[in-house]
Image (cartoon, rainbow, N blue to C red; front, side, top):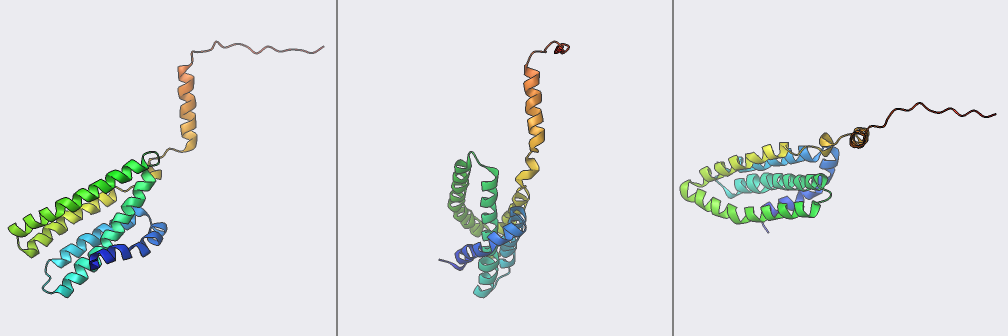
Length: 173
């Protein structure tokens, strides 16, 4: 296990309380920014200690925060098709694990280490935009009263109009 993997897993100790305190959107945004920052700070590295500090520690914490926040958001967004959504997400992660080594190899053949890491840092910055799209589910929910009123209105629209009758008054003798 690498230091990066250790930091990704270690970040789990902090993610739960952070998500409860702030939100999965803010934690995901912080993680995405931290992940990209870790890569960008790795570019000028001239020692293994520098790479360990920036890529493994800073980047690992960022990846851990961002991925966990993404999975929490995924579980909030889906109730009926949650299993399919998580499965699709995991399939995308596996695809990334297959594609990224090839991309890194191509980058290293075209650019040096510094240029390759800068390009990867730029790609990682795209996750900041993705994190901004993690909107709280309540932003898209309608209040219960409005839903009930709309359902009643739709039912009334489907029924034929009833003629208006005057109520009959019954008198007791």
